[in-house]
Length: 306
Ligand SMILES: CCC/C=C/C=C/C(=O)SCCNC(=O)CCNC(=O)[C@H](O)C(C)(C)COP(=O)(O)OP(=O)(O)OC[C@H]1O[C@@H](n2cnc3c(N)ncnc32)[C@H](O)[C@@H]1OP(=O)(O)O
Image (cartoon, rainbow, N blue to C red):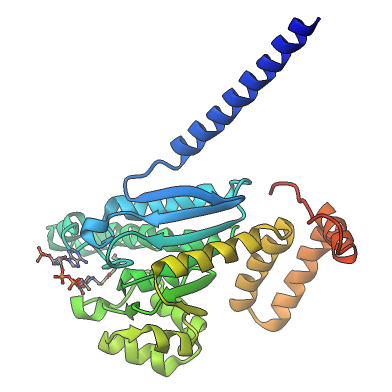
């Protein structure tokens, strides 16, 4: 009898190890990228790192494609409730990879008729815009953690995030004007809504001057400035973890409705909220969170995955 029980226990252990291994390998396959590293440093928290340090994380065609794949996957991944997005190497990003503009220049300089060129470029720019819109559309809040230079496309990227922290050595530069472009993947649309000062946005966008950490905090572009990268990641992961322990129904609904409110009138936002919560108030999360709030000595609330 004893040996049958032991055999059963071994089988259960083997099965759970196999299940854990399968989960790990499915995670690694799903989040295997050339330009991004994805890890799970805390329960329900994913850490996405832009990982082209030798190139200052300049944005090449693989990066533009992989950002969409990564954030669309995270959006639907119920094991993730909050994301920290940082970068490896000396700078957060040097923006568009100026050595990887072949396909763009081929179209621009090609012999095609102007209308055909327009159609190709339209698709090209739209697909690049989606790389950062996928952060905004991700169901899970994204905290951008910026160190060093955040240049050109970097500003487009971080304005699509929910929360921004930076290090004392960080600087932000809307550099597109220096390469003969109007910034076209989000800065001009989102930055005015993030920092509220149209005058400052225009000054930065027309001159391409660097905005350093203290000014970025004063302007509201970042909500926290930390002494160095280690302290910043610690703060970002703690914030993500705090979010990840709240009701996912409440957090995801809050993100969705804040985005909606930003893009609509107050009346439209309130009407949308009614429709949203007329459904979501029926969620079990409301009962679980309310009970836990009342019973402060009890265990922290546990919510189902979403
Ligand atoms: C449809 C398109 C949508 C997207 C649009 C996006 C547009 C943009 O992002 S516009 C901005 C483009 N980026 C730049 O203009 C960055 C210019 N670079 C810099 O300001 C500095 O190099 C930087 C602050 C990044 C680093 O300065 P640091 O002093 O630390 O190093 P450097 O000696 O200047 O640079 C070392 C080598 O890196 C090369 N490099 C820098 N940035 C880029 C880049 N964006 N793409 C490709 N290569 C880059 C730099 O040329 C040096 O190379 P080498 O001379 O061979 O050592």
